[in-house]
Every structure is written in C-alpha cells, then in structure tokens.
Image (cartoon, rainbow, N blue to C red; front, side, top):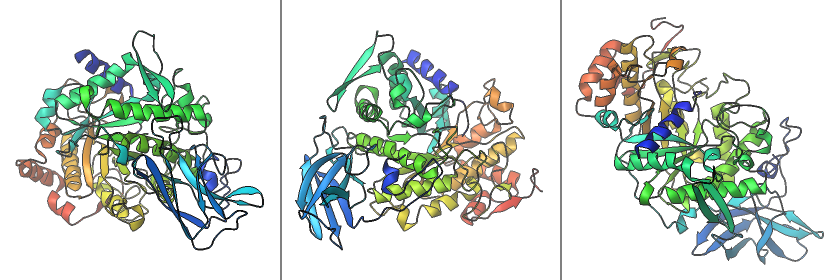
Length: 550
C-alpha cells in the first residue's frame, strides 16, 4: 500500500525507549531498456539438482544431446549473481555424459563461500568456454542451519502497529505483528559510539548499534508478548548504505524503498552479510525471533516501493530475483524454519501508476525465474485492499475494478480466491508439492463512510481469509487512524485519533473466537445477506457506481 513510513520509525523509537544484463541475459537480451528479447540457444544440459550435502555441494546434470567439446569435459562455473556466463570460478569438472555429477566444497563462512552463488555448466568448444546450461542456485540452504527455532504459529489475526500498546493487542487477541526494517539505517558505524562488528565470508562489516536497538527492542517485545513477527526488509538511501543501492536506482527519485544492488560486487557482498547478520541476530537468543521475512514491499510497484530506473519488466524482475535468492539462502542457512516472502500489491491486471508493473505479470516472471534456477519454498505476501482504497464495501466492489475472472483489474478480499486458486497451479507449487504459504500482510477498511460499513467489511474479509486453507495471516494496517490519511477518506484504524474505540474494534476482537457468531450476525444484517453463505458459496456481488446499491 502506498503509505508513509514515518509512523513505523516513531514506533521503533518508542519501543527502544521502552526496552540488467545479469541473470536476464541467460534468458533474454535487454537492449536500450526497451525490452527486446532474444531467447538463448544451445543450453542442452539441464541442472537437475544443486544441493548441500555435509560440507560439500552436489550438482546433478543431464543431457539428451551431448554438446560438442574439445576435451570431453563439463566445467561447472560458480558465478556471483551479477556475473553472466563463463566469467566466474570453475569449481568442478567431470567427464561429459548424458548424466553427470559435480561435487565441490561449500566453503561456508569463507571468502570462497558458494552458498549464494549461481552455477552453470560449460564446455570447451573451438578453444573457448561455451555455456550449455541455465543457471541454478543451491536449493536446500537449510541443510546447514544451526540456529533453527520452533515457529510461533498460533493464529492468523494480526496487526501492523503504530504503538506499543500490548494491552490493546492482547485484548484484541492479536497473534501476529508486522514491522519494517530499513537496511540503510542499520549499516555503518553511526556516530562511532555503539558499533556492532560482524565478520562474514572473509570480510568485516559494521552495524549501527544505536539504530539496531530500535529493532532489537521490537523483536524482544514481540517475543515477550508472544506475538509472531514478520519483518519487511526495505532498502532506503543513506550515506552508510550507498553501496546497497542498485546503480539504476541512484537518480533523484524519492521513495521509501530502492532496488538492492545486485549489480556490483561490494553491494552484493554487503547484502549477503546483512541477510546473514539479521538471521543470526533474530533466530532465538537474547533478542527473540523473526519467523517471517518479506524481501521488499510491493515490489511490482516500481516507482513507489522497489525503485529502479527501468520500465523493462524482465530486467526489473531478474534483478529482484537475485536479491531474493541471496536473502533466502542466507536466512534459511541460519534458521531452517524461517519463511521468506516476496510481496505484491492488489493491482493484479491494472496499473494505477503507468510506471509500475501489474502484480500478475510480475508474479508470473518471478515464478518463472525461481523455477528455472532452482525451485525453493518461497512464500507470498499480498495486500488485497479495496479498490479504490477508500471504497467502504468489501463484499460488493465496483465492477470496473473487481471481477470474479482471472483478468480482474484488482485482487481484493471479495475475489481473493482468484489469487489462491492461481497459486494452486502445478507450476506455482513448492518443491514439496504443496501450495505456497500466503500471507495477507496488509489489509484494512475505512470508516470514513460509516463505522457499520467498516465493521461489516472487516467481518466479511476475515471470514474469507479464515475459510481459505492457503492463507496464514490476516494483518490489519494499524490500530489507530492516521490524520493525514483521513484527509483522503482512509480511516482504517480500529480506534479514532483520540483513542476511542470504533464499532470495528469489538468485531475484530471477537472474530475467530467462540463469540464470532454474534458479530457475524450483526455484519450479515448490515450487508443484507449471510456472511458465511457469501463466503462458502463464493457469491460475487458487484455494483456499477460509488453507492452501495448502484
């Protein structure tokens, strides 16, 4: 959602006081940022698996047709994410065959670490090295995890808070919290008074202890109060974090999140260190645990949350996938039970901002790369707000924005099953064959046009979520209204600005409990139809204009 991040930083202070041409070229050629695509040819070798076994990496390959070779050998290259083709390091060789295996050291925690590199097969042909396979990443980083923590899964009801009011959250029955972490803020020595040192892959890194205290306090607070925590990683611009910003994100554009630097070595290594550091710091121990990590926010919203000065979908997705792979492997190599999410907004087949990408097209390409380069157990975070954001009726959206078909402009709670059904396709399944975990990590409904409409919308939406077997989280965006957003008729809090409770407060409190039927009955009366029946039957209602009965 397009919202400011200031209140999240304020919350952190309160809590502290209280306590392409890179991977793209392997698939296509991007020229002059115009999206000209030429399919790569000659990749007759398939990498079937790339897994850790003990302190070694084992890569199994096959080929229906053997590629021509000067010496009858396969060469396995380990490339950094920003490299392409036969430019990395040869880590193993084997005889060319229809089926072959490479084995080489993982070299974890060394300058030669292969944990987050990508691998490809080449042959020597005509005196030159020629790539004959697609790239592939290690797909079981959890095999070396040493700080695995039991997950705190105990309910789907959550909130993205704007206060540290644990009494309110416990009264509401909150099980989950979401919070944003800004990478640029935590790196570097700060003023030098509180520097946290971290050695990783043969290099030393500095973290700003004063800035970390904000996050330490929040993670600890969540653990003490038994709130499961999801942390969203944003890449903001700071002097200390300059090398984290992608070269195509270094213009004057201003937004809360920028593309991560998967184009240069210094930035790439820094990102690896940050991912490993955060996973180690927040996997049990003194600070508590982050169970879920979201890599970027609404990454399809290019100009607003994951900025890169490119309108080329293929380039943008491939660069994001590299960053995602780094975080996935580095986090899972520490805590095998952590979940790692990608994040999309509700603009499924429509762009409200022509500079952004539709979430469906972005999701499709993300999934393509993840399958092509080694399927892993990634998870999906979505924000199915009403369309528009200040529409008060979740159960009856306007037909110009929401439909029950796959080409719907928006995914909202009324048609959330379009998304979850889509994720049931074979090509989207996790390696286990299961449908991926799906989190509604931001959701909310305005009371600007009546507290009854907000309460009914919330009840309908929560009932939709709890009856969908693939949804694990229902996270409301804040408990209290925001004065600035109210100017745009977005009053999504459960409380007014003065702290008084709205009608929706008790509705949310009792949803998912033995008393839920009472509030569902009230919501059904407001809606004019039975909430449970609407959900169970997937009854789709729509209107042609702004008013409810248009």
